[in-house]
Image (cartoon, rainbow, N blue to C red):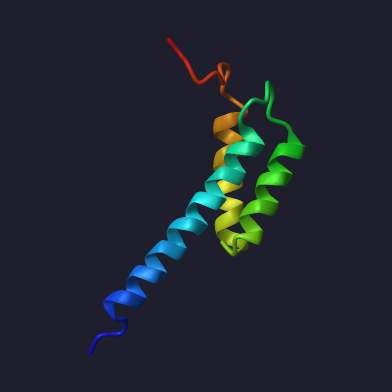
Length: 81
């Protein structure tokens, strides 16, 4: 039994792609161009993730990993040559 017709599946796929792009754009806006990542930045990221319905547990794991990675990163420039 097919759960989705090809048309429905394509609509779902397009919708999820838009959601993913929107989420990554919001995250990029928060962290790109900042000389330093501070607690306000992590609070903004947490709000974005929670509003995207990722859930508290997953959001906490992502924020924890981001803290350990971004706070220890000395050179945040895009061009690291």
